[in-house]
Image: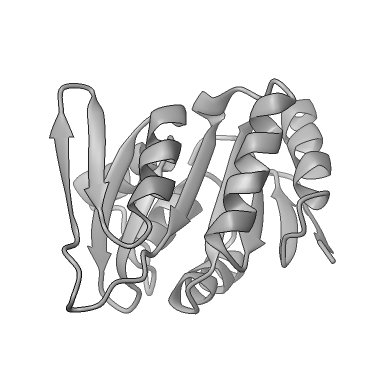
Length: 180
């Protein structure tokens, strides 16, 4: 496990998560240090799929425009079907951490591949379980990674965007607070 600082915000809707991404972008936060995770709402009546055309990932689904816009701003994109959580979409460096956990067989006891990816960047198991539960409840996770100062600034911005909860994770301690 390497040392990193992260702030994780939970949002009820994709609109709130998108607002937070835009606020962070406007503030000059490095978009390559942001990740978002969520599920698309789909039914058997709609096509759900993804494909890569050159360097751009495309997604069909109810929230296709939302994911397409985020994938254009953030570094890395993926679709995973995770047992116990279901199909999720991920954008940002968290994609590489999930893949690293899968390829390195670092899946930690009782954690999903997503959980192992989060755990590998220093997020404690009890928080991982909370974040996985939020995803199961169709909420969205927005993560910002970086130096302690960058993460603190990202947390301050996220708190203005009405998250359900925001928590900062460092190798030393966790700060959390309600976003409401």
